[in-house]
Length: 454
Ligand SMILES: *Cc1c(COP(=O)(O)O)cnc(C)c1O
Image (cartoon, rainbow, N blue to C red; front, side, top):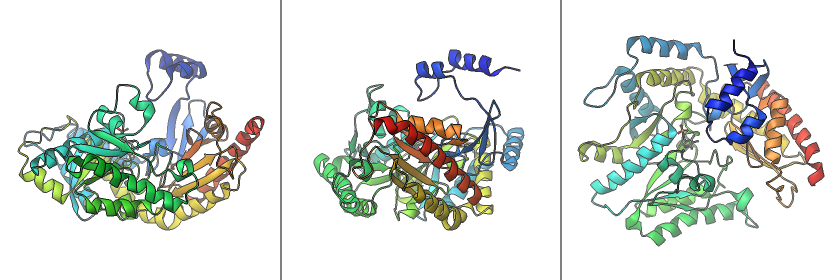
């Protein structure tokens, strides 16, 4: 059996990790996660951790689901792979498309399958441009996105995203994608009320459409709430104003629900939660609870009709579009969510309890704001609560807090000095208590460590 240090050495020598500074990783050594059950992870040294991030926002039904293992294993025996190109198809992909159409908003009844969230957004880019060509409006090509959005890491995904650190590497964004301000009141709202700031951020969309000319704008892409950007939940005025603007101009709405889909907000899709009528919805992550990679785009009827009837061959797709094993995992994952009434349970029980317990953390001297919806939340760590003043970013207070969470047996992620929580939807009320208690211990320790900078 490989020992911890030989595994760590091989990891550093051969494995380039995503979104990682390999040099500092090598200095610190990596944490090797070996197994998981329910909402808990165990690392190779036997340390038990409550997974407050559901992996990477994806393990909605929790770990250790034997029925998904069985469904996948059965599908592998029967048909491990076949494509859906060239007039072929297979039962799991058909059944999954039908199932998702039933769960999706009523005006959306078709699915294009991909292998990931990034690929879903690449698909969106090509599909909306093709749509406008077919509608006889070939100049409608530009997609408007937002600063600090996350739409994946492929060339189109990273370009659609608004992460400046990503744009710097690889000469992005590609042409035809522009960004407007994000609705991040706590970070950028200044003296405005959240409501006034929300309106202002939404009106940046109208200003951008007018600047570019409506005849040149294909779509607006947005996460219902920004995930990787720091769980940024728009002020209550934001989405209604965006809706007003989208109704006024002929601009499509691409809603990136890679995190928010499949129950995170207490609705199947956040489109319901925010009362939106998207033209395309990107899905991945919770679609299979991460057991097997899969993504997709849910397509509104008005787009699907054009792509189906007027496009000829839509020259787009992936070898693994609708992969039968992934589709089997997704179907069983959805069956579990339905059978255990996880969406209803999040809406009526877990989320109200989780959000009210989290509000207690707002009293903590290190915490500037706690915000959340459903089973997702952010905790802003600040130097001065009343001034909304942050610590110098060089200190890395968020990273300290993340590491101290681990010391106390909790996985929380940090985005700068914003702590992020997004646990499996199966978390029990007692486990919510455990999460909060561990978070308080980590906040206390972080606060003690920060005193010298106060
Ligand atoms: C994770 C994520 C993606 C990218 O998904 P991958 O499967 O990593 O390609 C896209 N959009 C959002 C909102 C995400 O959170």
